Length: 378
Image 1: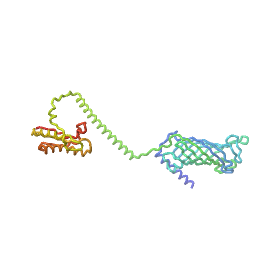
Image 2 (image 1 turned 60 degrees about the vertical axis):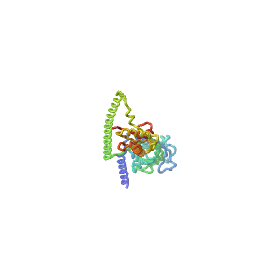
Image 3 (image 1 turned 45 degrees about the vertical axis):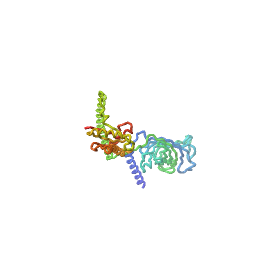
Image 4 (image 1 turned 180 degrees about the vertical axis):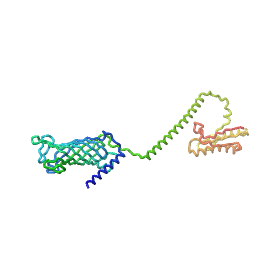
């Protein structure tokens, strides 16, 4: 049964290591070291009064977390000479006994629950260790006593921050030497002590950062996206070069225009005589009384020049709805045409009416509510 349990623990540890190897980035050598102080009590497991023989203990430990599950370390623990154990003769020093040893730990939460890529607020570690035990004896009553010891325990760790841990540490330590107090060598409850310590530790480094694994298909898809983006960049560069070439040509034309000698227009009479303007109120295509003289001037000219024609282009300002203004521009051109046909009897064949939409000929926005009438003579 014990072999089965041990094999299950080893298989779980191996699985946890394999899982962590896929997601945990390998830390540097000087990462994940810790150092700490311990303090508490120690008492014999039997043949003594459990509380009556209890004494204080202080210790120091230093360790390194090898993986998110397993760690190693070294520790020293000293029992304070404040009380007596039955049958023992104590030294005149400040300490009755000491233990210095090596240990290994296993984080049970990460072992069985998987590593969550961050420090858990609370964990439980199993601890196994071995080392050198030493009892200090008054020289007048005998000599000091050394022995080989093993230790098992649990660490209940409260991770206050990512670097500071406060732990509660119950443990049992066995003296494995024989011929001591007529006890045989081996694990014997009569040669075991129980300790309950509280400790604080500081960890160095950034722990075990996780990396996201990528499969081959995902990497290939990302490479495809990169190549597509590179193609888009190349196309954009080519287009930018074309626009730069066009800009250079326009700049050259602009310089040519600036360097061109000015030309004087000597006769613009025909231009002024051939154009008439009919202005409208906002949102309206009705010809007001003050604009009718302009229509009359167009009719008089066409009656005097039977071979003439007129092109009427209606415009609207930017005010109002766009679609409405498009229709309004056409209606203003038609309004002038209808006045020429109905009131002045000008044949429709000599009139062309066009709606030109939104006008921007004049800086004064209200001037763009207009029909521009251009007279032509064959």
